[in-house]
Image (cartoon, rainbow, N blue to C red; front, side):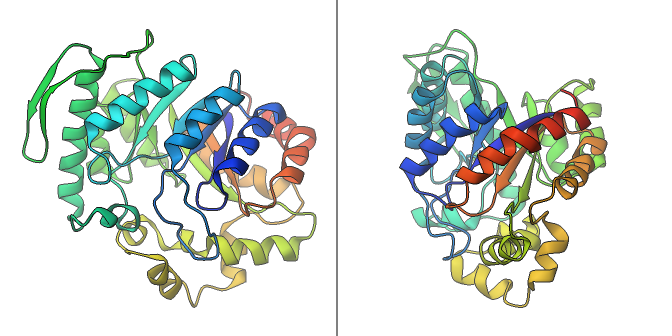
Amino acid sequence: MRIGYTLMTEQAGPKALVRYAAAAERAGFEFEVSSDHYSPWLDEQGHAPYAWSVLGAVAQCTDSVELMTYVTCPTMRYHPAVVAQGAATMQLLSDNRFTLGLGSGENLNEHVVGMGWPGANTRQEMLVEAIDIIAGLFDGGYLNYSGKHFQVDSAKLWDLPEVRTPIAVAVSGQQSVEKFALLADSMIAVEPKGDLCRAWDAQKGEKGSRKIGQLPISWDTDREKAVARAHEQFRWFGGGWKVNAELPGTAGFAGATQFVTEDDVAKAIPCGPEVEPIIESVREFAEAGFTDLALVQIGGEHQDEFFGFAESTLLPALREAFPS
């Protein structure tokens, strides 16, 4: 299993994220993913810089680590033709280190453009069309497209990389797997569900495609502080994506999680200084069939010490337990 690091735009400003990206590469993380948000989940997180500007800077301050959006919604806040242009540019800037991670989005980020918030089936229809457009533009030449949700008039990407930008798509169940497995190179999911991995492989007719997960942790030398920080900034995580995709703002997430306790969070997220709880949580993804896992270190101001711990202790332990 390849271990990556999450540039969490909801918990740090743009300059800090660029610095963390360089430090994560030095520490030995094999890839880096960036969230793409207009809003944090909770007021306590306090940030939401523009992910594509951050990634452009990260491409210049890193040398070999793979970069990825985790994930961009190419249907409302962005038109898919614009996302294709951004992805092609990132692939060029990073010397072919970029993967375009896509998903059907959350109300939290997409409602800001005033287009409302469609139902889940409609959002998936929109994402299918968006991927068709992006893939068509990656093919080169001019593209005209007339779909149910999107129109494209004589669009062309004038700066295309020699290596085609891979596409990964977020899925959460059988329906989304069936829709997207044959349209994407890799799978994204945030829960260690073996049935998702098996369904994805079955749709693609292979077992070797990438399946990329994400795991929040709260490392700190003081476990009580780690638990308190995880509760303050990441209690939204426990609602599940059927809830998380629908709430429109930070006040909604605060209300929905008002009865979530520190003990609840500590049961779901590895907290504290020990390596073993992290290894056991990673093991769930490995046994489910994930090939890649991006860690989230909770707390924007608690990264520097974490990189030292990751380089000296955590990453060696994970490589021994889960060889690439």
